[in-house]
Image (cartoon, rainbow, N blue to C red; front, side, top):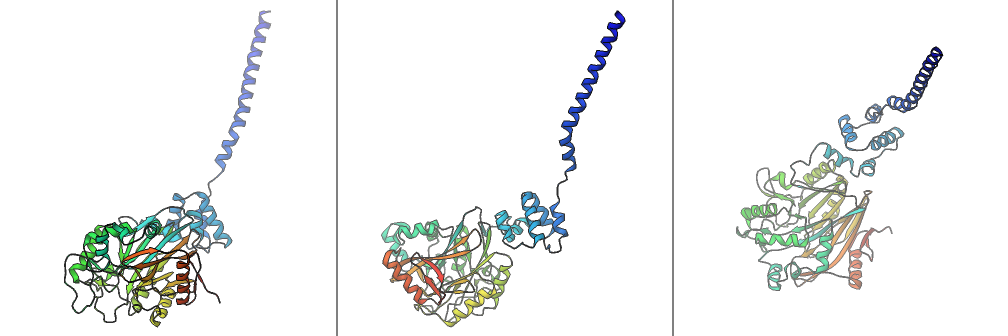
Length: 441
C-alpha cells in the first residue's frame, strides 16, 4: 500500500512538472513572437536610398542633418518624390515649414552671432511686408516743428489708423531722407539739407518701422561726421538700414528677413541726383550704393538670388513732382526683374507714380512722400502679402499728406485715389479693396 501511494505521489509530481513545463513553453512561444518580429524589422535608411537615386543632387551630410531634425515621414516623402519624379522646390516648405534655402542656412549655422537678420518663426497663412516713401524727421524742416508744437507724439504727424496699419504689419520699411546728427556742416552748393537730433530716432519705433533705406540724396547732407552719426544712431537703436555704409561692402550689403519659413534679401540703391553730390561708397570710404550704372546692382541681385527665396530691390529714382515715368525707370526696372528681383519699389519723386507687372513681378515705381513736408499730396503704403504656399498678393493702403500730417483715407476718397493710380500705371489695376492686380486687356 505504501509503495502504491508513493508511486502515485511521484506520478502526480511528474505530471505537475510536465504540465508546468508545457504551459511555460506555450507562454514563451506566445509572448516571444512579437519580440522576434521586432528583431526582424530593420529601420529603413532613407538617406542611403536617396543617395543611390540617379536624380539626387542633395548633400549626404545635409540629408543626415535633416533626418535628425525632422520626422522619418519627411525622409520617406522626400525619397518617394525623388523616386517618382514628382519632386519640386515647393516640397521643403510643405513638409518642414521652411524653404530649402532656409534649411540650408540652418544646417550651416549661418544665423549664429548675426545681428543683421530678423528671424521670425510661425505658421501663418500669410505674412505682410509694408513699404512707404520719403520720410523726414529733420529738425530744420517742416515735420518736426509741427511734431513739437502739436505735442501729441507720433499722432501729431500721423493719424491713429495709419500708425495702427503700420504697427500691425509683420515688417515695415521707409525711406529715411536726412541725417541723424548734431554735428557737421551743410554740404556746399546744396539747396535743401536735412538734419535731425539723434533722439528723433525713437519716432521710427513709434511708427512701427523695422528697417530704413538710406540710399538717397539727403543722408549725407551734413558731411562725413553726420553720416557716421546716422549709421551709429540706427545701430544703437537696433534699427537695420540698407543702401549706405562706412564702405562699399556695407553699402551694398543685403538685409535678410527670414519670415514664415522664407528668406528675403533687401537691397537699396540710388540714381536720384541730376547733379551728383552724395558720395558713392568705395572700398575704404563711406557713402551710398549708386545705380546710375546698373552693372553692380545687377550683380548683387544675382548674388542674392542664390542666397534667398525672394529679392526685393528698393531704388531712389524718378523725376521730382512728376507722376509720369522716366524711361530709365521703365527700362532698368525690368532689368532688375530679369536679374532675379521679385519686387522693385521706388521713391524720390515726392509724388505717387504708377505700377507695372512684368513677368508676374510688381514694379512700384514711386511711393512719393509719406511724411515729408507741408504740401498736400496723395500717399499710401504698399503691402506685399506672402502666402504660406509662396504666392504673392499686393495691396495699397491709401493716404493723404497735408499740413505735415499723414492720414488714411476711406470711401470715395480712396476710390478716387485708386482710379488715379490705375491711370498712372502701365498695366496695374487698383481694385476697390486696394488690391493691385495685373490688367489683362
